[in-house]
Length: 300
Image (cartoon, rainbow, N blue to C red; front, side, top):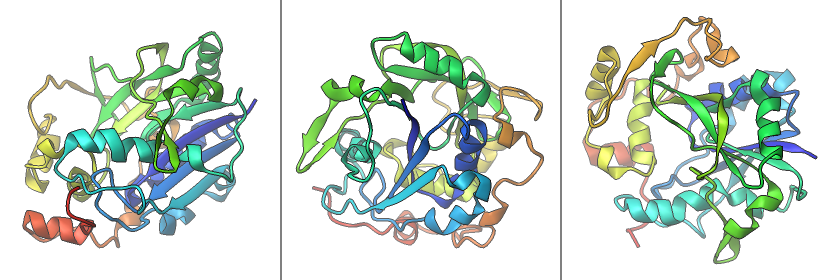
């Protein structure tokens, strides 16, 4: 039985999350499968942003990482302003393109830990999580602690269980087909783990990358805020859109609820200081889209 972490990435700021999962789970996993695409969820074209920063990952961790660049030009459509179609087509294809990777061989009993890149599994809880799956007949959503803005800002009272864990044989019934590929979006399942097994570090990135995220991910309704609003929300420990209850508890950096790598007193994003999107000038919305992620096609 092999155990794989499977994820995908889109931005150079995500390197610390990759390091964090490898730090926690290097000895537990067979490989970490990481895919990067030339499109965002919204269908905007993008460069392969992560590749040139892979050298930031320590040598003693990198051999478990399999990073692949995938051209999705044949499958992505520009649904920039259509949230329903983003979630119906573009997003599930990206989340599950690994099903079409002819260079990996997955056996029926192999276990897949299906996460977004900023969802970190605790190494000291890993075996317990595997045991929960072995005692289940169904794929499970993995319950995580939810952090917001900073590595030690815990969002209290917020249930988060989007990532999943399953044996490969468990997902046959969920697989769909589009053109010549298979896809299935294994997120937010009804059966969940009994315990918390990790941390989701949501919106933990330099603020300029938060602005870019608004243009990249599948929620067009949230795009009306910019850098100034985000900076003020972080300062006030408020939710940027103020539409749900938001309670932040600031943890000690030594807290066991924080993944090991993020307990350090360092600038985790220092390697981005030469990035072209840091310290952006004021731009119109059209200019932001054009600079970050050039539009591919009219919406279909």
